[in-house]
Length: 227
Length: 227
DNA sequence: CTCCTTACATACCGATCGGTATGTGATATG
DNA sequence: CATATCACATACCGATCGGTATGTAAGGAG
Image (cartoon, rainbow over all chains, first blue to last red; front, side, top):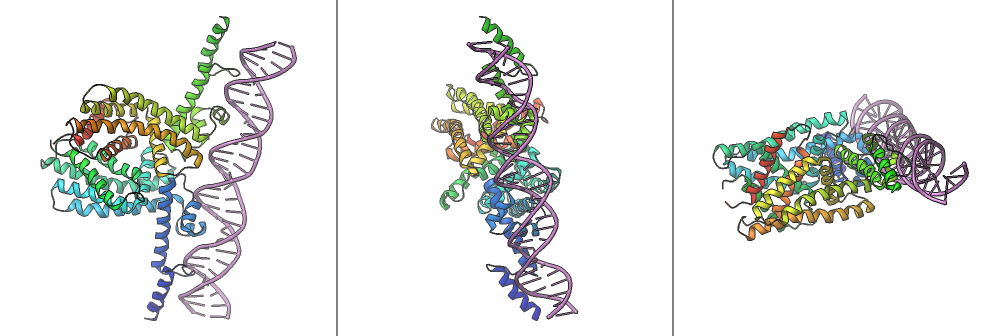
C-alpha cells in the first residue's frame, strides 16, 4: 500500500537524529517514550528520585520539559515507568528459570546468577527500582505517589516470591537446610539489592564481573546449603 | 563556689521543657544539638536526605529554622552529624568484639548479632547512615557535600574492615571455608544494610525481633561456614 | 490550498527550597 | 544600673522546583 510505504519512510526518518514533528507513527512515539524513560533511569540513578529534577532529565535527554510532559503526566509517573520496565526485565528473566523443571538448587543458582547479570546489563533501571522499594517501605511519599508505587510493589512481591518459593522447594526436597524462608529470602534480596549500590559498571572489567557474580552466587548458595 | 551552684540550677532549668534563653551552659548547648540531630535523623529516615527540608526537621523538633542554623551551618553538616553519631555507635559496638580474644566464628556471630541490635536500637541514625553510603557511592553530591561525606566514608570503611578482617581470620584459622573475602564482606554488609530498609521497628514485637536477629545471624554464619 | 491534530519548544506560574539578615528577650558582666 | 552576648524567633531572599499555558512547525485529511 502507498500508505504503508510512506509510513515506512516516516518511521526511518523518526528514528534518525532529529525526529519529525507533526503526526508520528505509534512506533516512533514508543521510541520517544523509551528514550525518555532511559534518560530518567540514568538521572534517578545518579541523583536519586527526590533530588532529580525534570530539568536534570531534560539535560540528560537533550530535550525540553515540554517534550517530557507531553509524554508523561508527572515526575512520579515517569519514575513509575522506569520501575515498571525494571520489573518487566526482572520477571522476564526470573520466571522462565523458576518454572523450569530443574532442581531447587539449580534454579536458585541460575536465578541469582541471571539476576546479577540483569542488574549489570540494566543498571540504571535496577538502581531506580531499588530506590522505589526504599521509598515505599520507608513510606515517604505523597498519597498520589503512594498509589502509583503500590501497583509496582505488587509486581515486586511477585518477583521476590519467586526466590522464596525456590528456597521453600529446596527445603522440602532436602536440598537445602532448614531455614526461616522469609528471613533467608530478605537476606538474599539484601545481597542482590546492595549489589546495585556498591557495583560500579564503568569501572569493573568483564572478567572481574564474572568473578564478582560467581562470588555472590557462591555466598548465597552456601547460606542455604546443607552443612 | 557560688558560680558552680548557680550553674547547676541553670542546667536543670535548661533541661526542662522550655530551655532558658541567653547564656547557656556547655552541657545545655550539647543537649540542644543532640535533640536537633535526633530530629534530623528521624526526618532523614522518613523522607530521605534529598527530600527532607530543614522545615521538616523543624516540625519534628517543634522549633524554628533559626534555632537549627544557630547550631549547624548547613543541611549537609547536619546530615554529617547524624552519620557521625551512627558511626560512633557502630564502631563503639564492633571494635570491642573484634578485638576480643574469641575465635573468628564467635566474633563474627557476636558482631552481626550486636550490629543488628544496634540497628534496631538506633534505627533513624542507621537509616540515615545507609543513605549516606548510597549517596557517596552513587556520587550524587555537590563538591561541598562530597568533601564532608568523604570524611565519614573513611570511618565507614574502618567499620567494614572489621568484618572483613574477621572473615579473613576465620579463613586462616580454618574455621571458615575459602571465599573471596571482599565479595563475602560486601554481601554480608548488604544483608545488614538492607535490614534497615525492610525492618519496621514500630511493628515488630520483641520476641519476633529475636527471631529475626537469629535468623539473619544464621544466614550469615552459614554463608562462610565449612560444608 | 485550508484546516486540524500532533509533537513538541518556550515562557511562565505559585510553591518551596536552603540560607541569611535582623529583631527580641533572657542572662552574664562590669 | 548599662552593656554585651547568647539563644534563639521572625521575616525575608534569590534560586529552583514540578507543573501549566501558550506558541509553533510539521505532517495528514479533505
